[in-house]
View 1 (cartoon, one colour):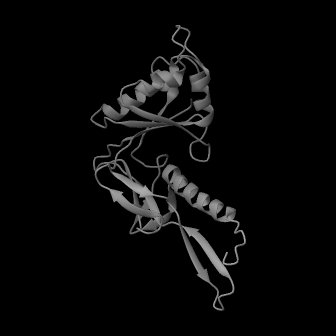
View 2 (cartoon, one colour):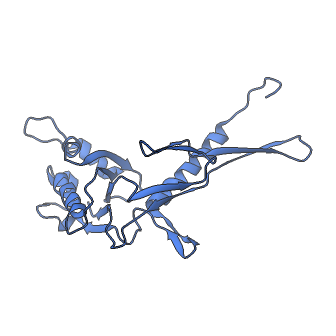
View 3 (cartoon, helix red, strand yellow):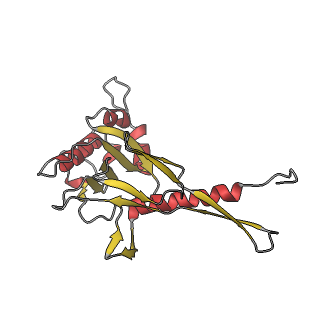
Length: 222
């Protein structure tokens, strides 16, 4: 670098991506092999208090290929919202919906025939409380599965070590100024070789209340 030669940084970019993907994997699946003070890491798909259901048990759903029939998706999402809000669970949103990628594509490809030009994604986005809809790859959410999350710190937040990719917390907006990954550089004892490592120190915390009320609805079988 001092001589003006180009420094190829693609390996650093890929290493940073691996760190970010591991955090995403923890958020989805947790890691029960890590135990600290008797506590393990739960994810959206593994937390014992999450609300689970098969979409075939949703009233009015008319096909095993749930999202291949117009209107089924809205019935399923409405049932997920009712699950989080009702029965004393008392989680009223706002919500983020994660849909496995195959079903997400189905939602965008099937249109209503009422002249509106809407597909199923359009209709879901207008449902009260739905803040966003995201597709998820199968590593993070298996085919046929959906997650509806009340997106606030009572349901999920991030524990992190400042300086390792996480810079400061904006308390007013409840957000972290984050790159997620930091680069550590050192030299060999003789100073002839520079070494680098991309790393982060953080863990997502998926929560429920003391009485097992959860802001996570996890449905399967779509």
